[in-house]
Length: 147
Figure 1 (cartoon, rainbow, N blue to C red):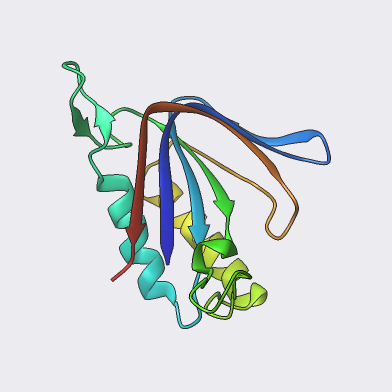
Figure 2: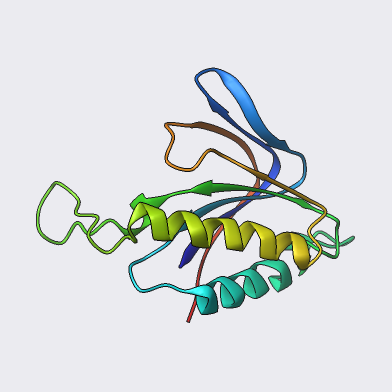
């Protein structure tokens, strides 16, 4: 699994012009699931996400976790994180998990973040065409992968 984390002042996602998820200070996470991922990767990645110290402390240093600051998370499914462009100009997505597997792990990841104490977890609509708006904070963008 891959999580492309963007630290934000705010973020929102809409489908067909209707806002379906919106957060304040926290992370917008683009989440990719690859073929062969399982619950093991969900647990590894969710632990990394909630303990990652990329939120600013009182001195403006990246020294706090999302839990430390009571931040919010907006999660967007993103199979294109597993694009392979080594064979030409048109990406291949063969490494991405099948939609039914990816959806199950996506939901488990959301549930695990809530269980670990993230106070507000919002989502996009799995498989839908979405418009995502973010107000980057920094900007800070970190790619985190499960082992």
